[in-house]
Image (tube, rainbow, N blue to C red; front, top):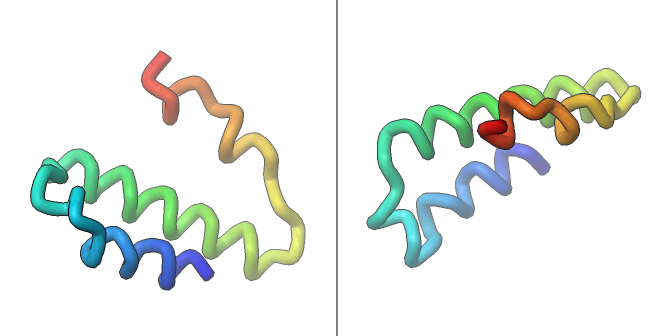
Length: 55
């Protein structure tokens, strides 16, 4: 699922406007999501972390 999401980013019409930092965040999120999905124990912290949201 995470790899499909990441691959879909490149196919998006918006991808022409992505910066290197956008791709770096996407890699981080895809790897974190993949790890959570594989562990069978989803961490809500992944989505709640204020550093990810830029606060």
